[in-house]
Image 1 (cartoon, rainbow, N blue to C red):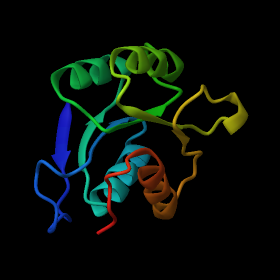
Image 2 (image 1 turned 135 degrees about the horizontal axis):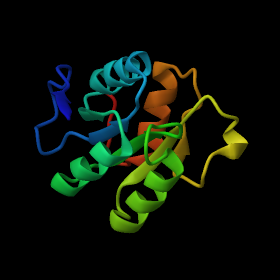
Image 3 (image 1 turned 180 degrees about the vertical axis):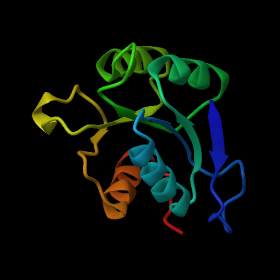
Image 4 (image 1 turned 90 degrees about the vertical axis):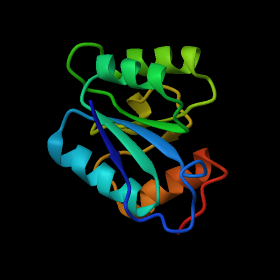
Length: 133
């Protein structure tokens, strides 16, 4: 598991910063999500599988989980259901190349390809205490 803390937050204290769990097995997509959330001032935990995500959210509280649907092993649908039942306060955003109508019920969607503006919209919609830097 790789934990990467954003370098862009100058105003927010460590306690105030939004914590985002990104579950994405594509290196390119994971890197892009990491960059966008870091620029938004978030602390990012980046994992590549649902199993790693479960370990991560059991160790630490996250404000938002961004889950790719097509993961190796347990898929994103199963992970989203499990996370919502075990951590109901954690907002869930689904990201995928699949049609958004096929996404499970979630707090937000982030269809691929996504932009930095869409990532900020997801933060604004799902984590009310997030303030853009």
